[in-house]
Length: 113
Image (cartoon, rainbow, N blue to C red; front, side, top):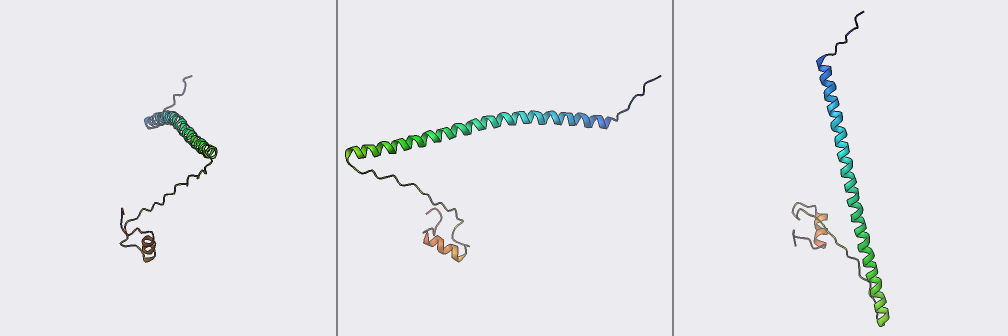
């Protein structure tokens, strides 16, 4: 007996080939993304360690200055925290009166002043 030969249309074969290629591209992209994420995570961790070292050094410096002041019989004044107040404005023209008054109270009547 002769075996039955199954016929697969060419369009179906092309779709399968395209799907296989797309799947391979996605897998390759996923591998590259994982490598990038790993490198980025390591970079973020190193940056965080740097900040920890910096703040630890700052604390040690303040502690050292306190001890030196106490040893010399002086007072140590704690450094005040730095606060920045930043407002980005288009300008005072075309702004509602309430907002304009607030900007005037903050002495922001001009841009870049």
